[in-house]
Image (tube, rainbow, N blue to C red; front, top):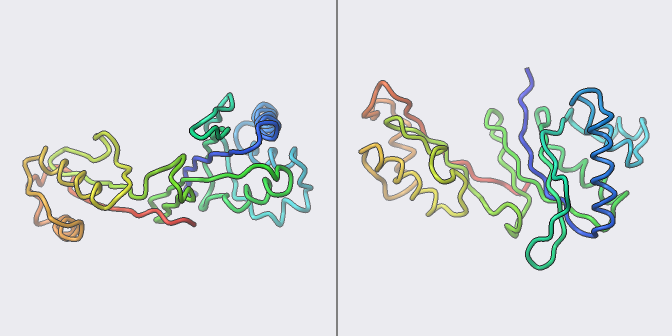
Length: 208
C-alpha cells in the first residue's frame, strides 16, 4: 500500500487567474471518476497534453478539500487553499509547472507531511500561510502532544515548551533541551507508565 503524503497548498496572486483555476479544479472534481484522477484531470483541463502528462512526474493524487471561494488575507493578498493526498511524494514541482505555464500571475506554497518516509516540507519561507517549522509528536502517561493546542510550532523553544507541557501534565520530569528529551524518550526503560504509550519525535520542516 502506498504511503500517502498529506498536502495543503495555498495558491495566491491575481484574482482573475485564481477564479479561472478554481473553476477548473471544481470541474475536475465533478467530472473525475471518483477521487482517483481528479488532480490529473485538473492538469489536462488546464492545457497539458497526454504526452506532456507522462513527463510531468505528477504522483497519483486526489483532492480531499478545496476552498469554495477566494479569500483576501493580510496585505490584500488574494488566495485559496487546496488539500490533497499524493502517493509517496508531494506534487510541488508539478503544480509550479502548471502555474508558471498557464497561470503566470499565480504562485503557490505548500506544507506537507508523511511520517513513514520522514517527509516534512513547508515551502512558505515567510510563514504567511503556514507559519510552523516543527511538528512535535509525543506521548507519555496517556498525554499526547496532538491533544494540546497545536503540535505545530515555529521555534525550537516552542517545541521544548510543548514537550515539557505534556510531561508536566503526566507528572513526568521536564527537560532543559530537546536533545535531552529525545535521549530520555529513546530508552523505553525510562517510561514511568509502562502500560501507556511512550515516544517522542521532533520533526523539522525543510523548504523542499
